[in-house]
Length: 356
Image (cartoon, rainbow, N blue to C red; front, side, top):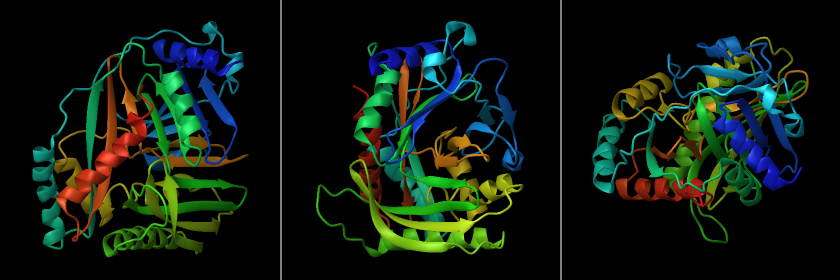
């Protein structure tokens, strides 16, 4: 089936609120599809309960009654096999509001988030924001997905829809956890530059961010008696941005506690802060909006073959009449409001560039 026909089919599935995910791994030419054909998706309210599960998972930044973990059972794994009888229509609702923060409002929020850094309560905290725009009538989520596939070859590109989570489209460079057999990997991704070309130089602020994230992951793995092989930090590119990345590869002979391992890593300081719980709580109390599934994670859990879970960043939520784009940046003592605003503006371009 042609790409155009597939785009139309994806749009049709979203319009009918089917539970499905279509995705492509970084540097791969293979597009994968999973869809649940009948029954409700499985909902969970504890990360530990992911142990032993199989299916496509979409999890929020913070679990709540309205944003549970959702697992799509892979009843169908070939988009060409999808027929209209495989799903039912359910009502779609619009939950987003067009309450975009401006530069002045961001500056006030920055100083609120800088306070716990200045007084030593936190070592790092991630401040994010959303940008909501009116969806053009001609906008096609399916076509946008394939545009992202063509444009962002080194990222994990995905389009996922369930009646609970809504519709999310993204192109994320940040792996949370991948593995097959006994060989598993996670990454520390922190530090951002937006060079036009050539070599990238890294200042102390970005190097410190990277060090904090790497140290956190090493400490979390150590609680499972895991000592990884470390590669990095090195520069990696995603869309118009460059990041510092460190790969951590390790053996995992027993996956019975996979849910506990995921919980220990999520959210990493790359999307939340340090100390973990204090930053997590500060964001919830002061950021001023609900991140929902932004900075959560998503991907296929398949312990018999290959598991690939990525952090839900460089993404947008697709509503009935609105598109909400998300971006964040890591704050440390040397951060400035001007630089962090510019960084979020650059990150928003990843999704904005494929809207039309």
